[in-house]
Amino acid sequence: MEQPVQQKTTIGRARLPWLNSLLILCYLALVVSAIWWPGASLLERLRWLDSGICAQLLTHSLYSGGERLPLCARNTGIYLGFFATLIILYVRKRGRAQALPGKSLTIVLSAGILFLAIDGTNSFLVDLGVSHLYHPNNLLRLASGLLTGLAMGIFALPVINGLIWRGSNTLRSLPAWTELGWFLPVLFLCFSAATSQSGWTLYPLAILSTLGLLSAVGSINLIFLLLLSRRDESFTRYKELIPFCGIALLAATGELLLLAQIKLSLFQALGIPLS
Image 1 (cartoon, rainbow, N blue to C red):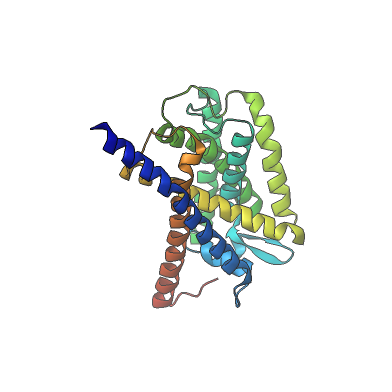
Image 2 (cartoon, rainbow, N blue to C red):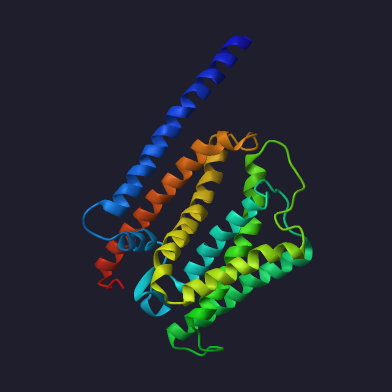
């Protein structure tokens, strides 16, 4: 009775490298197409990929070297901050953390999200032409986005890890106030780069913020993929997770492209010009 089970497991593991190789080929094809396929530039393709999620209003956008970034100021901050936070967490060896920060840190991080909610609501009231608290600007949009991206990364990683790894741990994603010393300088560097309007920051900001968007959407896909496949809380090594992350990110790319096409079709039907 035990032999068929063992054989099934062996076959499943034997197929894993083929799936990884197929995913690598898919990603290489996407990268090559985005950079060298005739027609639109890489920046224009990134704008198109991000357009289904972001309104990309000209007045709400940041410009580097005279070129508009693919995401608006607020979304640039959110997804750039999210991606930078994930990188720092893994560099600090907290990639498997399953515990949220302590109460005081949670309150402070949540205040960053509240800041975004207030600034976003105020900006929306201005767009409607009704009474508002203050005149919004892209610096506030970017700053509130970066703080929200920081909170998203620190809050989301423990939740996702709880669904991935076999067994639990008490490692916090942000264990102490002093750990903020690793995040805040990086966020300030992102803020300075995004507001410098320097041409050399254009592609790094465009690519990293888009990768942050893909990571956020891919994380949601990964959660559903683990639950649907009943593989939650079953992993012990990062290597085992590669095909699941690859499929989740590939699906995220397809979803963003689909949203972009839906937005284009909807705007054309309603006669709304795209920015």
